[in-house]
Image (cartoon, rainbow, N blue to C red):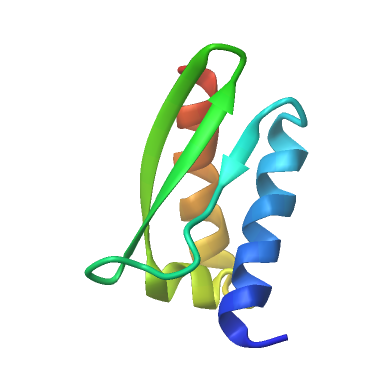
Length: 79
Protein backbone atom coordinates (compact mmCIF):
# COMPACT_ATOMS: atom_id res chain seq x y z
CA UNK A 1 0.00 0.00 0.00
CA UNK A 2 1.47 3.34 -1.00
CA UNK A 3 1.49 6.45 1.19
CA UNK A 4 -1.60 7.94 -0.45
CA UNK A 5 -3.69 4.78 0.06
CA UNK A 6 -2.48 4.45 3.66
CA UNK A 7 -3.52 8.06 4.29
CA UNK A 8 -6.94 7.54 2.73
CA UNK A 9 -7.46 4.42 4.84
CA UNK A 10 -6.47 6.32 8.00
CA UNK A 11 -8.91 9.10 7.04
CA UNK A 12 -11.75 6.59 6.64
CA UNK A 13 -10.91 5.06 10.03
CA UNK A 14 -10.92 8.55 11.55
CA UNK A 15 -14.41 9.33 10.19
CA UNK A 16 -15.75 5.92 11.31
CA UNK A 17 -14.37 6.60 14.78
CA UNK A 18 -16.30 9.88 14.96
CA UNK A 19 -19.59 8.66 13.45
CA UNK A 20 -20.09 5.30 11.75
CA UNK A 21 -23.26 6.45 9.99
CA UNK A 22 -21.39 9.02 7.88
CA UNK A 23 -20.70 7.97 4.30
CA UNK A 24 -17.40 9.18 2.88
CA UNK A 25 -16.36 9.69 -0.74
CA UNK A 26 -12.66 10.38 -1.25
CA UNK A 27 -11.60 11.11 -4.84
CA UNK A 28 -9.00 8.86 -6.45
CA UNK A 29 -6.71 11.80 -7.18
CA UNK A 30 -6.40 15.32 -5.76
CA UNK A 31 -7.26 18.45 -7.70
CA UNK A 32 -4.78 21.32 -7.38
CA UNK A 33 -3.17 19.54 -4.42
CA UNK A 34 -6.48 19.24 -2.52
CA UNK A 35 -8.92 16.41 -1.96
CA UNK A 36 -12.56 17.50 -2.08
CA UNK A 37 -14.12 14.94 0.25
CA UNK A 38 -17.86 14.37 0.56
CA UNK A 39 -19.36 13.50 3.94
CA UNK A 40 -23.00 12.39 3.87
CA UNK A 41 -25.35 11.55 6.73
CA UNK A 42 -28.97 10.93 5.81
CA UNK A 43 -30.09 13.67 3.46
CA UNK A 44 -27.31 16.05 4.53
CA UNK A 45 -24.03 16.43 2.67
CA UNK A 46 -20.95 18.45 3.52
CA UNK A 47 -17.78 18.90 1.46
CA UNK A 48 -14.41 19.43 3.07
CA UNK A 49 -11.02 20.03 1.48
CA UNK A 50 -7.95 18.30 2.82
CA UNK A 51 -4.49 19.01 1.35
CA UNK A 52 -2.82 16.09 -0.42
CA UNK A 53 0.21 16.39 1.88
CA UNK A 54 -2.04 16.06 4.95
CA UNK A 55 -3.54 12.83 3.60
CA UNK A 56 -0.07 11.42 2.93
CA UNK A 57 1.20 12.42 6.40
CA UNK A 58 -1.98 11.46 8.28
CA UNK A 59 -0.85 7.99 9.46
CA UNK A 60 2.47 9.23 10.87
CA UNK A 61 2.11 12.84 11.99
CA UNK A 62 0.21 13.43 15.26
CA UNK A 63 -0.21 17.17 14.62
CA UNK A 64 -1.69 16.54 11.15
CA UNK A 65 -4.00 13.90 12.64
CA UNK A 66 -5.19 16.39 15.28
CA UNK A 67 -5.80 19.10 12.66
CA UNK A 68 -7.73 16.79 10.31
CA UNK A 69 -9.69 15.32 13.23
CA UNK A 70 -10.90 18.81 14.18
CA UNK A 71 -11.98 19.55 10.59
CA UNK A 72 -13.86 16.24 10.37
CA UNK A 73 -15.52 16.65 13.79
CA UNK A 74 -16.70 20.15 12.88
CA UNK A 75 -18.05 18.92 9.52
CA UNK A 76 -19.82 15.91 11.05
CA UNK A 77 -21.33 18.11 13.77
CA UNK A 78 -22.85 20.34 11.07
CA UNK A 79 -24.50 17.41 9.26
